[in-house]
Amino acid sequence: MRTLGPNDPHRKEEWQFQSRFMGCSYTIKTAVPLHPASAEGYPVIYVLDGHQYFTITHDVVRLQSRNSAKTFISPSIVVGICLSGEDSSMSKQRFYDFTPAADQYKYPERLQNRELGKHGGAERFLEFLTQELQPEIVGRYPVNRSRQTLFGHSLGGLFTLYTLLAKPDSFQYYLAFSPSIWWNEQDIYRYMNNPGASVSRHSRIPGIFLTVGGEEGFMVDDARQFAERLRSSPLVPDRFDYYVAADENHASVVPAVMSRAIRFTVQS
Image (cartoon, rainbow, N blue to C red; front, side, top):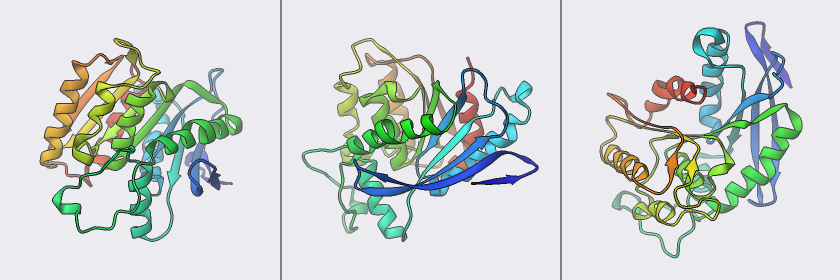
């Protein structure tokens, strides 16, 4: 455990978490406020691909929570779920962790010559999050269980939408950046058409912030179509914000929009 410094009102912790569901370990990074928690506990933001996005998420929370009266962002815990190893091995792990299982997989032309590894681990990865990691975080820190957020980008954004549709009560806010809706010929709609057992017809689901960079080509159309179909589906979100970030691409959309997304989780 280490404190970042006098200008950072958080302490950072890092440990290895061996998952029995996934059969592998993840590096878990947390930034925990030094400011005393309220009676309800701290809000929590779970960050997929934490090896890439933990720091920027923490920085947004750190900077804006210093002036909560104006930003409305209160001190929050940031949890990064991080992969390690070479890029190729991390890429294969992501394709397994973040993709729903299917009887068969069809690949776009740009992926047909790539070795992607196994697919279809999303259900197990969700069990890891909800049955292993969340209880660990609740056991370590004072957590507000009614203000838990899941963030994911690209394939992580696909997993975020999968969780929203398959088990929406896992989190209260879902931040899906540039989600890979294209995966397996848009198989994600199978879960919108046949939602999980925890979702009844016309039930309300938690808040979702869906964004895509305006320069992301077909992914803009995919995100727009998903937004339209979600609005007209039996699944009615309590709050829903669809935002196209003009002039941003697949890489730049995260730093460009993260502050807006975090504010979404605190607006009433």
